[in-house]
Image (cartoon, rainbow, N blue to C red; front, side, top):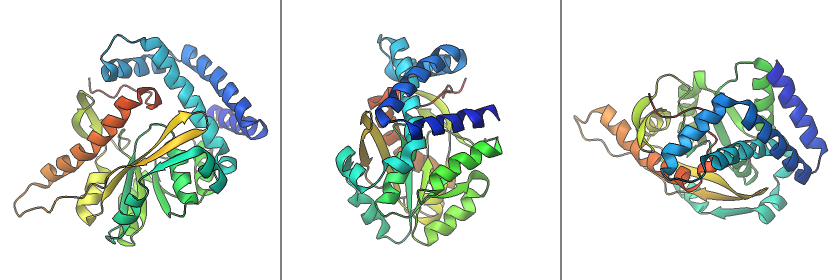
Length: 287
């Protein structure tokens, strides 16, 4: 329950402070998080060491990850007040939104794939405000009040939430109705992921997007909302990835790996470009 009250307190504060003051508060608390959480600090630093492969100041980069996480939370708690058409016009640069519309014309649904980078939650809300019917798969939090808090924030912005335990069936239904299903592809929460090359090492990553695409023919469209500065973002829609037409005798596992490799390459590029915006507080490499 401590986490719930902490989040509620953060939500209360950020909704009663200006955005500028909220960012200052987030920066202060993020630095405390950095110093008080040695396990998180170690995990983030080790991840950056693999991604950067250089002699840059890893301590400074690690601290930036914590600060970006604080900004992410501020924006998540305030997104009902932040995101509207005027905010989008003034603060969001949108690149290639037409690719989603083109993918929907195939009438097989669309799998929007993102990662824990920038502000993926805000990205889903942004698309909802722009008129897209969004359904997102979300891992339930262990504490019911925390789970309800997070899902209320999402659903109040018009996003339908599918818990992971019922994800496959409900995602198939949505895609059959030519709807959009949003997933994250950089961390496996099911204990049923695939070991695959990722950012220069072996990692266990989810295969849900590849399975859904193979089963339905739905294209996978990688989408990222990257922070340019506090409160200002760029929404990038990548080229759709279509599942291959499988010849008779081809092993399904090979097809899954083929699809995964394509979209993971897009995610890798984005993480290498913006490593301090990748909010991964566990070591991703398989020991």
